[in-house]
Length: 385
Image (tube, rainbow, N blue to C red; front, side, top):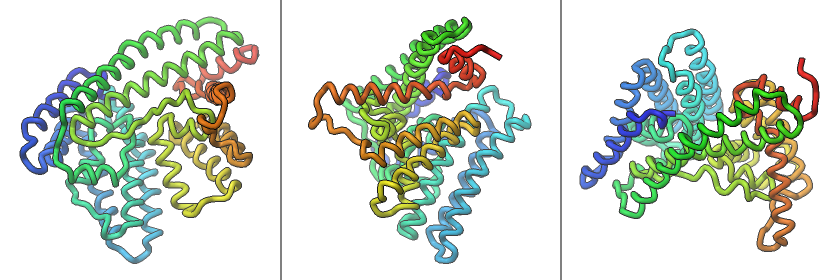
């Protein structure tokens, strides 16, 4: 969310210049990137910085303890995860109580915290399975949590990959620099130009009486809107992250050419799907699961993803809807389609069916739940109440 502020953009570009000028010094990106993150948060909100310094330090202490302890490891591991989930609700409650007054703080505390809690959980998994071998310095751990390019909107960084990058010297060649700048410009164009225009069109149509064709249009239009919005943020984050010397995972991998929902969720917000899939399957099914187990875990994962987006009945229903579809794909062995072994007609027909199923529920991402219900009533030609 920082990317709509030109001062933030200029600050990150300035940080990239400093890293390039100091690239001959060992550990320049480890030290300077953390200093930049701390100063950035300090200028944005002193209370936000204090919150995250405490949050990071407490979790680092828990992380080190889990790496070293042999006593009650599983209980400690589960307690640490539950405590962080509770921190999300406490942090949001602080905003509701008016403790934080920054006009953008609602977005930063909500989105930033729910993304950073996932990173913290990934670090705890690493500590749980690797024990003493997984321990890292506080400098690198803090860098991982506070890394500004991915602070509020992802992509979700894997602890192991980020620590591996931290050990490498800062290197950005001409090709990487050019590609990263192009990604940043593309992301800004999506977010500032396309999303702004598309939001205006969406709101104009929404003000009218809705019938089936208007509701279908709004669903498809909103689907495209959130794609440009979120992929735009991802483009900017990936560009700046790479310019700061870290490998950034792709978050969108041609999701519209996914012939099944299973493949779709590996291509749309890929790092979120990977997180839940890796951590749920890793913990509950370390061996290859049966079809019935895979179906049940798919339902659980999608319900959790739904509640991660928002703790409401609509998001719960969204999770159940996608979870049941994924469960059916697993039960009937329809979770993959090999493009090379299928006819083009069949492959693109499956892609169309997948997109149709996604479009039916995508409007739930809208923060205006009253508008969501209006669109569904219009789709079914139901009267307003």
